[in-house]
Amino acid sequence: MLGKIGISVLGLLIASPCWAQEPMSSLPEDDSKSVIRIGGFYSNSNSSMDVTNPILGNDFEIDFEQDLKLEESQFLPFFEVFYHFNDKHSLYIDWKQLHRNADVQQITTPFQVNLDDQIYDIQLGAKIKTTLNIDIARIGYGYNFLQGNNYNLGLSLGLHAMFIETGFEGNIGACIDGGSLDTCGATPTNQMVEESVTAPLPDIGVYGDYEFMPGFRFTAHAQYFYIKLDDLKGNLVDIRAGVEAEITENWHMTAAFNYYEVDVDYVHKATQSDLHVANYNLHYSFIGPMLSVSYHF
Image 1 (cartoon, rainbow, N blue to C red):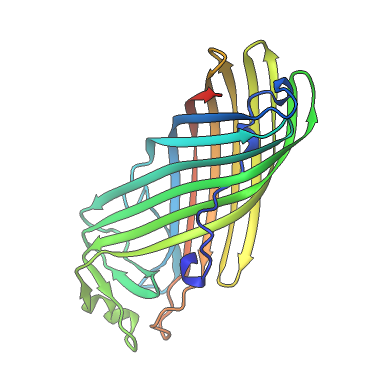
Image 2 (image 1 turned 30 degrees about the vertical axis):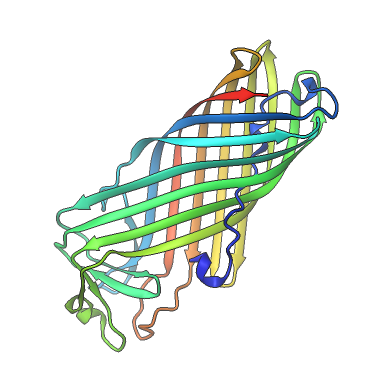
């Protein structure tokens, strides 16, 4: 989607200085430090998309978990790297993946959807396979503006880049230019129809960590941003809090809880200009625990 309006800032990803869980004050001045972290999170997802009822003509939200049977809970991987180049400044990059698909033997709520500037019709009783793949990558910068013997507080600035693939395959009709909503189902398509979106959302945030006992540190971050650009608008909320334990000097383990929410709204310019179908508006959120191990060097 965003790729279609000329924004290809993908490789960008975000900032999440919450990863600044190693006490900055313990680093020698001007001494660099790197951390690699891998882990998984148990995602309890809630996702929906705006579509149009072909019978009533009104827009409504279709729920991917309830209506299209995508799995609601999954254990999924994530990967993070961050680099402290002195006691106040750091760079961050991370990635997480949420891929799901499901088959529905009989659609109980018919709908029409606008994908890749084309309107498609999914009728009552249709058998379809749904795909919703989301990859979230982030890159950014963190600055510790307040430090003490056992705590740090900082500001972050970066970018979330979301790579979203929404697809349907099965008994689907393609609406042709000049037709009506009633005749969309009469032109079947036997291929998978999909929309691939790249949604880069800048973010600002705060983060901090506090060593409440030797070898144990509480860490947290909160990030938010809203953007409106040409035919795209979106917003995100990213909150995480957890505890990091020092197993050895180099190996640490972290248990945390993460809440993430994003809305992406894109105004399509479908060729069927005489038909009204809801814009591509995807809402996604997940909440759940995370467990990871990190190597500090």
